[in-house]
Each structure stands twice: as structure tokens, then as C-alpha cells.
Amino acid sequence: MIDAGMLIPVMLGAAGDAAAGDLTLPLPSIEAGGHLFDCQCCRPRGLLGRELGRLFSARARGEVAFFRRVLLLGPPTAAPDVARQIAGDPVAAARFRFAGAC
Image 1: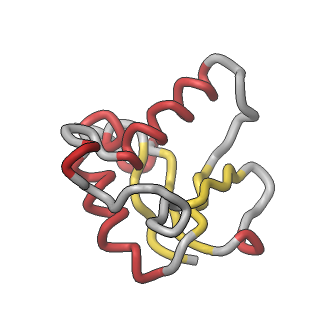
Image 2 (image 1 turned 90 degrees about the vertical axis):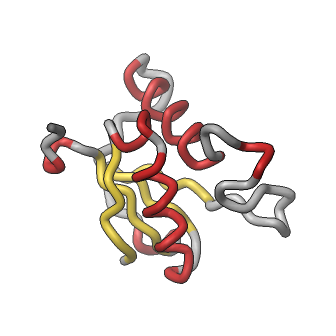
């Protein structure tokens, strides 16, 4: 069993909510040419799960600054989709936990 206290928190908020040690990451959007969460072309791993995995590996290799929390830049209404994507991706769920909106 994974201890939830050891997982990196992922929260939704605005750029102004970022604190020292946070990594900000924009949510993909249709307007920006991104994909919706859990779209057919991004299965079996969703876009968010793949991006979190890439960032976790980059952090471990020292390619990005060490971060204690990921702040997804997006609306609070995306919370259910974000929570589902993290919980439904075995790799992301082993490293991250959805901690709500700011």
C-alpha cells in the first residue's frame, strides 16, 4: 500500500497561487490544440499522466528544478477529471495525489 503522505500533491489553481517549490503546468485545452482528458488517441495512458511521468523523471535526473507540488493552471471545474486521470493512471497514482483546488 502506498502512503498518501509520500505522494507529490497536484492541485488546480491560477498562476498567482503558486508558492516557492511549486511547478506550474498548464492544463491542456481544446483551444490550445490539446486533447480532452481520456480521449481515445491518448489511451491507455492519458495526456496528464504521461506529462506528470515525464516531469517526475526530469526532476529525478535534475533536468528541472526540484518541486514539492504541481499546480495545474486550470479551472476548479476540471477537478473531477484531474482526480480521475491521476487515480486511473497506475504510474501517476504511484507518484502523485490529487489534493484539490486552491
